[in-house]
Length: 200
Length: 266
Length: 103
Figure 1 (tube, each protein chain N blue to C red):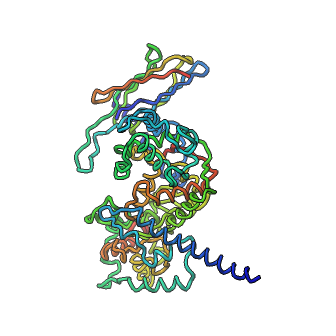
Figure 2: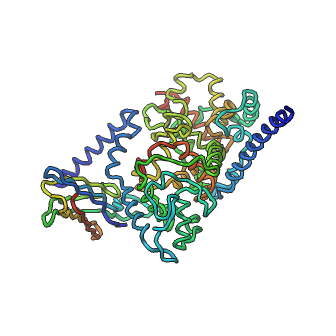
Figure 3: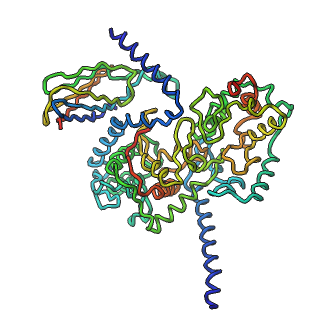
């Protein structure tokens, strides 16, 4: 009887040890199996807290998600001049949405990054070769309007999607330096300008 | 006369292009792939690879006919369907490409470093790809059958599963970002759900493949390399543990599915 | 690259079906390389298929045909064991001939 009672906690300890050992080994592998190439440096293999928390098939509990989201929310830079989209150009925004360029080891520091929006989202209803990983955003402002709330939410989502869903599949465009403030304003115009094909 | 004929052909092509985008369903290109299968240019690489297999090359001027792909020296038929597998002589779990490097080094004296540091479709790494076309072609129609009861293979599977969900890089992507749900597309390209046996078999069982859009033959190492490129990670090393682990995960998950090697892609 | 063609020929009910896969870059002359230099045109201009001494197909091809072209055609006649020979010539004057026995 005594022996059994001892055995149970020991077995539990062993399986926890194996799990954390696997975690350490995968971290080591994700570093040692890669090499730096141009702008794609090795520090890309080290995860920040969000990436680490969202590296399993199941997302963290609600409390952890909330805490992580609050941290990301603090990183959002709101437009310095208060202009969310009026000064942007939907034509420029369209180019950014269509471009999937930038940040790979076949790009260089001078490459103008795209947003790659069409990889995952339908935007212009006429463009049928859009991806379906994210929700379709056809008629974005026509459907949602242009209230301050939706405009601010959209800016924030574009800047750092993880502030609204810690484990979102969407990159942190502004926070990660993928798109500049000006580029985000253009993408905003693509979404909100009544003249944009997205809203036709 | 010829000019007129040419104009007709061009006209037809334009009409086809316009109508091919009318239905979202057609974006899956299944019919197109079916048409391509009959004349899959990957066969040209198979022929080249078969020739390379029996050609004496390298500092040791030897062929690969004694290469052991796991079913005994020289046995090619069905070998790829059971890879990756554990090899006692190297004490490693190896995929087909890393195993070929071992054979080329031990039998022919070709330095693996040349392949690891090389570029896809060029030099000795390009030759590995042609041999991959030949060897995988000899498993065409076989069932994927990776031995997960081997503890070393199972260990790589576990590492591969972890790596599959590992979010990192400039855009926070993991393999799972694109490959963990059914029926999704990135742009117009369908994405297999690798977390299901059907999706894993579809992914693992259709590479290596000839890509019609760029007229290139890509091995699984090449496919993974370009996935990581688009994930915005650092560059994975050819034949490194992460590539083997992910291969074991895909192949093991897809066990029982059919290998249609070499495949043909848009 | 001008490796061997992959030719398959099968005869049934007095008709032979020939399937040819050619190894050729088929450069259009319209593309540029990574440094912006034009890539010279390089494509097959003419293809001939013979059954024994008899020409059964002549095809004029151009730069709009894809890399590594695939061509399938049928001709009347041909029996198992006969030889089918396929040749192409490209705009640079390079050529290639391969043959296969009808199955």
